Image (cartoon, rainbow, N blue to C red; front, side, top):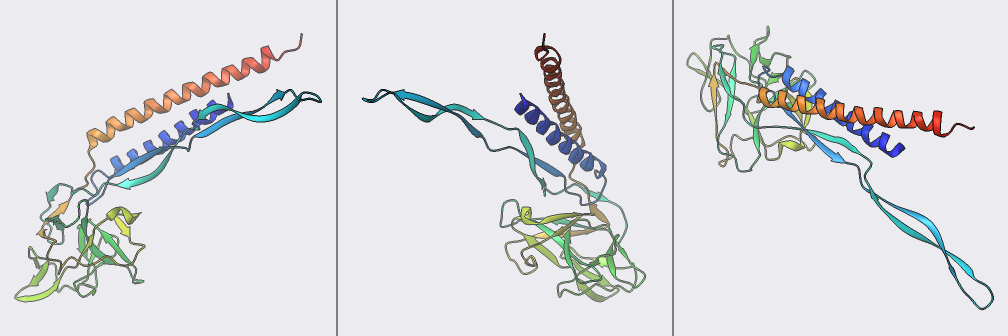
Length: 274
């Protein structure tokens, strides 16, 4: 009976984490460049139960007993959320009219499931990747994210702008007046699921820097100034999945309550001495 407690409780914990994930997706539905998380639920490894028995074999002297294992059968011990997997599909493009907003639009990519990222850097020189093109110009004149991460150019340098009066061409070249300022660097991830999601729209690569897509003939993309990529959260689907998770949580909760009543009856009635 205690195994039933563990199985139902593990189901409740998995659904609780799923609700937390869906709540976070819904909260970021209006965050530019946000990539919705998806839950990967998995059952714990199956156990094979057996019991120790013995059999009696007649011999010349006297019967002898030999122990052996008798198979009972497999048992599953519940479910757990193995990991959160971001969905890297392109979000819708929204016009903002702000010159510092830059949308990165995927074109042809050599790997199914691959995607492109802006390359950003913090004050310590740490490199991260993002799809959030909601940029700004900081007081020092550098193009940055709203969290202060510097946007890097094709040479890995921070992009310094004379003012917010600049133009971004379709290939990422920034022009102010008649002068070419820089070209925005773009990184290509053939398998973005290997990246670590850090929050605030940032991703970290633990296998070294991602290769640049600028000189890759198999990669195409375009930039749109005055636009941002919206979150790819499907609100209707997220709400439907949240209701499903709530119902699954309640079903497991009722199972725990039923086991609890059975245990209470076993302790207070069946086990009572008369």
